[in-house]
Picture 1: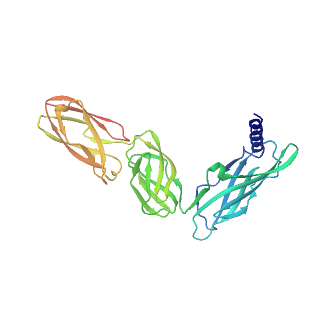
Picture 2: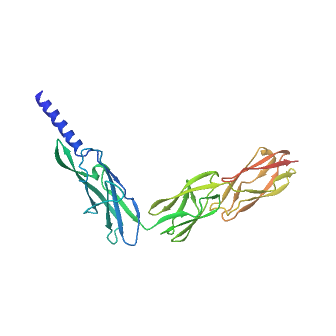
Picture 3: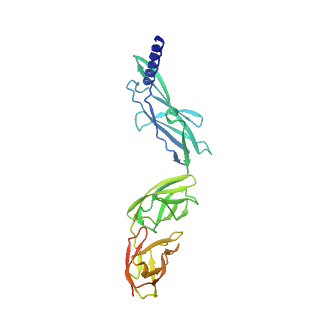
Length: 304
């Protein structure tokens, strides 16, 4: 019984020491995982230490960074208390940094000043990683427009094979130069904003949000009157050329026995298509023309 009591006291003492030596320390890494390359080759690594213990001796905090196997002292940052930074010169040819932080400080326990040392690896579950990238998008030239419109991206380091994704839809993308990309707004529902991502061989880069505005879909003629067996032509036109794969326009009717027509697809690179419409059984109704990003059109139909 006495032995168990001693063990309990021992574990309680260990827990108390652990609490007093900084178990509430939190390392908040402020370094970006993807760092744009710069001409000087010097990059700032930074973290904030969050110490909730009231018994920490103010001003005793010291920090080090171990980066790619080398250890360096960090400096207090002018951005605030308990923020530490270090300017690291990346060696030539090295594009990735593996690093962790060490924080030491003094605290008072039972009127005795003691020292504690904490490692970010204990909280992060391992080392942090940062990678240099020689590209980054700056802005969308326009942040809204209708389906089919051409939108520019201005940035740095664009390469052949980079593509733009709007929402969950890939967009036709043209890389004009290392600093300029154009994409065509894909067929998406109007009246909503969609996330824009630049998809590269190095991973996805968030660009911003793009709002799809309602466009104008032209249908000629605006009404149909046919005799049974007569064939007429309808023209469907959108403001901009259709993307690769073509642009599908959904045409339905409430008088299916009175009209015969093929599906409507504007070919890639064209902004209009001509479709034959044949009168079927006598009757009347409407053709309902729907396409993503455009208002629904209602074409009156009568077959004699």
